[in-house]
Image 1 (cartoon, rainbow, N blue to C red):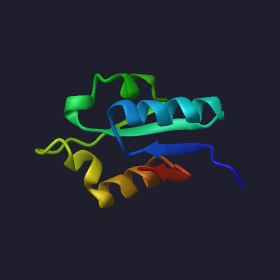
Image 2 (image 1 turned 180 degrees about the vertical axis):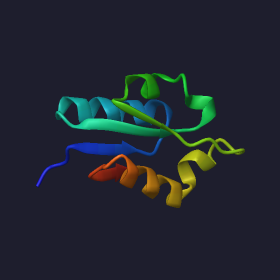
Image 3 (image 1 turned 90 degrees about the vertical axis):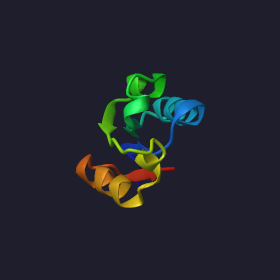
Length: 81
């Protein structure tokens, strides 16, 4: 059983490294992001970008319920924190 699509719930350099690894493995990369990161390299490079705007920028990544709901909505096979 392999993964076809993985949701990345991180930002910056870490998200970029995860994204590159998924791409090398032939796995589609979706990323959840806050407003502040909407123009970031990981968001621009991802196959699917899912906006999750919150008042506190870190809440976009730390709201577990929102991350799980995004993964379900995007039909992701896994979530990478």
